[in-house]
Length: 224
Ligand SMILES: Cc1cc2nc3c(=O)[nH]c(=O)nc-3n(C[C@H](O)[C@H](O)[C@H](O)COP(=O)(O)O)c2cc1C
Image (tube, rainbow, N blue to C red; front, side):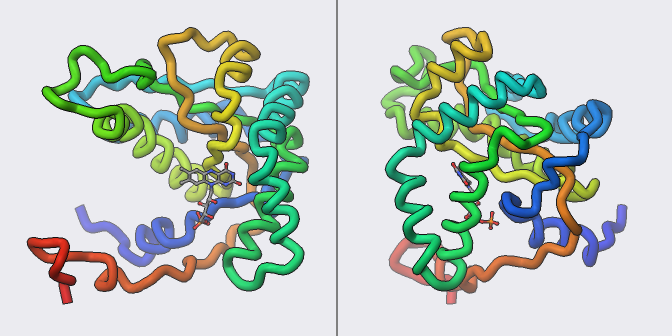
């Protein structure tokens, strides 16, 4: 199979956290959403456990409730973002302005998606490999849902939609679980506002050369 690298590399490098360019006025059909989720569940999971579950939220009152939880959970962070938005320059300033905008408008998203995974890390699982800490176990649990979330984001982007993985509401995860009837053995991995994007021309982000953050054989030894 020969991939068109121009296309695949563009998809991988221009799938951004979209906030200000979400088109809140255009509906997202179930078919498109389900197609993207179907692609998402091709992602890997630890022991092939496939413990992912997906909550799609369209009901306006429920979206209002989640947006309220997001803003309350985000409290100080969002206040800082709104403050920084006015005077921080460059990429960080843009992220802050954009984050503040999303917080103010979250309930306007035509659809919200909450990715979930079966299991909790409130304690180290009994069946965790010997000596595993919560930090180690987190890699297994979150590592079995976040690859699928990213695939979902890529599938959306390739179809003219966009999203932003957010985690701020997790500070009040239980409130969201109560609102959505999520049982106690499930972990929420985030909240994604999903919409068509206003335009599809997104750019690659500025990132450091990987040589500066890649090591060869030992952490003391930069790859180059
Ligand atoms: C684990 C994780 C949590 C995030 N949580 C939030 C969030 O709560 N709110 C938000 O506006 N953006 C959130 N983001 C989006 C990041 O701010 C965004 O990915 C980052 O600024 C880089 O922008 P880019 O994805 O366009 O390169 C989160 C991203 C990740 C990976």
